[in-house]
Length: 155
Ligand SMILES: [Zn+2]
Ligand SMILES: [Zn+2]
Image 1 (cartoon, rainbow, N blue to C red):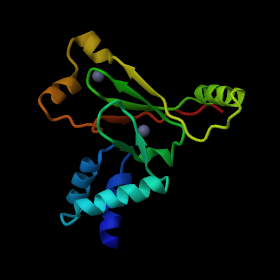
Image 2 (image 1 turned 180 degrees about the vertical axis):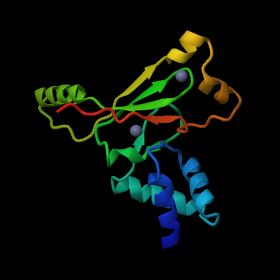
Image 3 (image 1 turned 90 degrees about the vertical axis):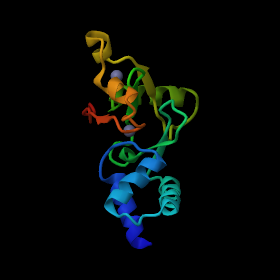
Image 4 (image 1 turned 90 degrees about the horizontal axis):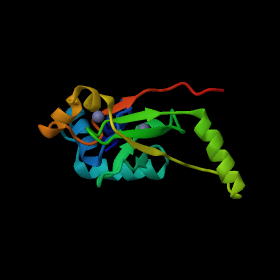
């Protein structure tokens, strides 16, 4: 049990990639074939309840988990509507704006997340988006196209 948990944690936090529960199970099984699906789901619930893992809304009908909120608690997501690529970004201006709005309304913000849906340059410029092609061929799975920019936060 403990060993399985370790494997699941490693699979979840080994990279900044977003993942669905099924994808996490896949990853964990690559590390240890005996990892059970039930344990993955149970551990996911615990991690989410403990605030270590956040469920994000990427506008799909699947639950996607994001392991990057511990390191970057204020990051947001841009989702390409062409190919589904997800880009993480951080911007201190948004935090200021959020503070202003929240305080003006008499609240203190505890958690927020912005999702921008956008069209990628590649498809518009080249007429072909490599990610889109891969997706059409069925090789692209939700959460697999995560790009972490780690944009520095202005002081
Ligand atoms: Zn993220
Ligand atoms: Zn795209």
